[in-house]
Structure formats: C-alpha cells, structure tokens
Length: 136
Image (cartoon, rainbow, N blue to C red; front, side, top):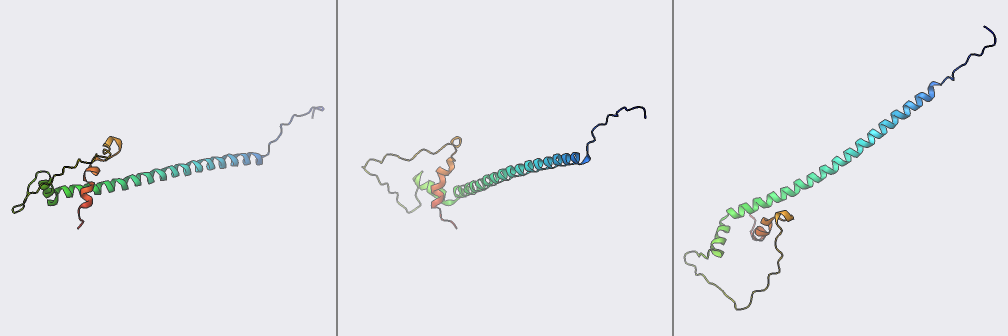
C-alpha cells in the first residue's frame, strides 16, 4: 500500500434496525386499516338497525292501512254511513232524532297533524272506527 493513507470507511448499517423499522411500519398499517374496517362495520350495523326499525314501522302502517281499507269495504261501514250520515233506516225501523237544549261543550281536541308535520290524517280519521270494530 502506498504510504499511510487512510481509507475512509462509511459506517455500516446493520440490517436488523432496518428490518425492525419495516416491520413496525407494516404492523402500523395493518392496525390502522383494521381499526378503520371495524369502525366502518360498526357504522353499517347501526345503519342496518335503523333501516330495520323503519321497515318494521312501515309494516305496522301497512297493516293499519289494510285494516282501514277492509273496514271501508265492509257492509258495517256502509250501513254506518247510511244511518249516521244519510239518515237512512231499514224497512220497519223508525228514525228518532234526539235534540238537546244544552249548549255543546267546546271542542278541546287538538287538530290532527298534516303529513308534512309528521302525522297521518287517516290514523286520526279511522282509528276510532277500527278500534271499535270486532276482530274475527
């Protein structure tokens, strides 16, 4: 060799810290991805539960509408309207009209909500009639 020349040596990096850093980054990526998937699954489960509640409510509303439709098609409803609204009587019956001199009590019922306000007008209109109808 020529003289006392010093050869500069670069510090040699060992392979172990590089492998540990790569493993830590990969593990971190998997942890973050798994956490995001768990959170997303939780959100989907909550949305599914909400949709199932909505479906159950719509099924109840549908059953009530079917009951209203069946009542409106029934002979009982037709007879009720003929007697109460039109004042008709069956052959052999006598119509009796009862009147009172007492003043009518003031109406205290709250008006039904419109569909835009969250109420169903048909529920208020037919619910008493359906409730009094005997079920077969």
